[in-house]
Every structure is written in C-alpha cells, then in structure tokens.
Image 1 (tube, rainbow, N blue to C red):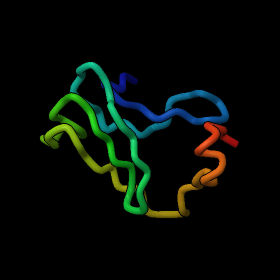
Image 2: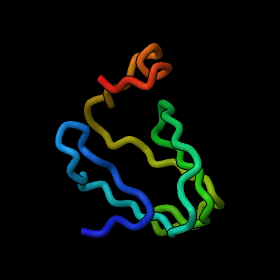
Image 3: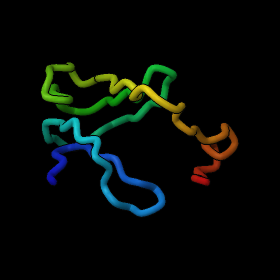
Length: 81
C-alpha cells in the first residue's frame, strides 16, 4: 500500500504500520514533536490527512494503551531502546 508523504514503521521489523494519513508531497517533514495529545507534524505542504493544515497538524494518539516514550536521556543521546 502506498503511503504518500508520511508513514510509520514498526521499530522491531521495519515493516510499514497500517497508519496511513497521507501528506501532500513536497520537500519533506521539517519537525516531529511528541506531545501528550499526539504527534505534531510540521512540513512544507498544506495538506495532512487529506485536510488543509497550513504546514502544521496534529495526529492524535489512538485510544488504548499509552504510547511508550523514550526516557529524556535516551532522546538526548539519540538512542532508541
């Protein structure tokens, strides 16, 4: 399945996850910011999830178990474990 402009990968397998919001294609996403409400995406285009979002949008986390986050020390070092 195509995932234009944005995708999510399983860190254990490297395979694409079902999440497929799409993003109009441009040069690329400029920022990903993890916040309690979800994932904030800043890009060089105006369309995220088939809606107008003026270069910034929020993808809310799905209901269910909390998303596992990295410890602040791991984030600073760039470690993913």
